[in-house]
Structures are given as structure tokens and as C-alpha cells.
View (cartoon, rainbow, N blue to C red):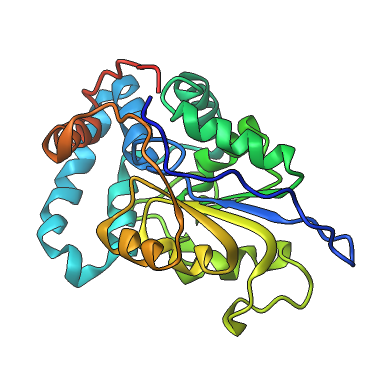
Length: 267
């Protein structure tokens, strides 16, 4: 495992009102080297191969991704879950989490999560992936709170399922988690949460990272790396299961097709 460029977190300071500090975590490519949306798709398609037909609706929209936007593209992608009930989804998500934890996750980052718990911080998992599997992942890892993208399911998943409350990404993460932050804390004020630490791989999470006193980047995007360097943010570089962008892209494509076999390496 590669060493991380990091300094140990300071011991939590005493808050006059007794409010604990926070540890805010992204999920995909932060705690785990993959996009769990693709991993869950792979998991479902291997059990239900006919659901690969979702590609007939999804692939024609890919060239229009910038035009139609991330949220609409996500709704099209989630068509592989068509007609599954909440009970069926819960069962699949439980099996999925049992399969990917802990072997598929970055061992180093699971250790970091445990360190944050030991520091007494309130842990929050916030992901753009659907709550269908974000919830059982958060429960399994012992997070205090979790947030994901919520789908309108009713009695079953419909074609192009509606997203409730918007895609849980960027500034929307702050809006969704606001009720678990200290009373009166305004993320738009420029203030930071005392005794807090944020973790992400993506510059899309800058709104979440910037409300923390400290932050760490995990194999960051170039934009995040530049912003983090200005603020002396820490960097984690755990060993990835793929070597380079090409191998990663091929693995992601195989996951979208339901033909990926994870080697479950030690992270």
C-alpha cells in the first residue's frame, strides 16, 4: 500500500456548547476505487442477464450527455432496475454490500474512517449514488448519518425513475445534510465547522470540503489537486485495482455490461 501524504489529525478541541466535530465522506472513488452505480449494475445484471436490455435506451443518450444533463442521464441508466420492488431492491442491496465489503474498499480509507470515529467526530456519508445501496453501506460501516440520491419507487421502479430532491452532488449535498449540522450553521456564510475533516476525490465536492477546517483528497481530480494545494490539504493515494485510465475505463465498461469479475485485491 502506498503511503499517504498526510499529517495526523489534531485531537478534537473542546467546544463550549458541547457540539462534536464532523467527518464528511464522499463514497465513490473515495472510500472505494469504483463508482458503486456501475458495481451495483454489474451485480444485478450478472443475476438477471436480460436486464442488459436497458442499454438499448441508455446508449443512444450517451452522445447527448452534456445536453441532457447528469440527472437525466442517471435516470436513463437506472432503467436496468425497471419493475423491481422496494423489497427486491433491499434484498439485492444487502447481498451487494456483503459482497463488496470490506475487500473491494480501500483498506487505508476504512482505517481513516475508524480514526475519525475514535476522534469522536460525527461521521456523515454523502454520495451521488442512490440510497438503495448507500444506506446499507453506511449502516455496515457505522456512519452516524448518510445521504444519497433518492428515487421515486412507489410499488416498483418505473422506466426513467424520478429523482426526489435532486441529484445528491455538489452544493446539493450541503442542502441535504444541513439538518444534521449545528443549529444556525450557514454553509453559505464562509464559516467552517470546528474540529471537522472532509474527504473526497472530486472537485464536485468542493462545497462540502470547504465547510471543513481540514480536508483530505483521495487520488484527486486535477482541479481538486490544485485547490487542495492552495490550502495544504492532505492527499491519500491507496493502491488502485487498475493501472491507468485505460484499464479503469475498460473495467467500468465491463461493469455496465454485467460481465466484470472483481479480483478482490487487498487494498
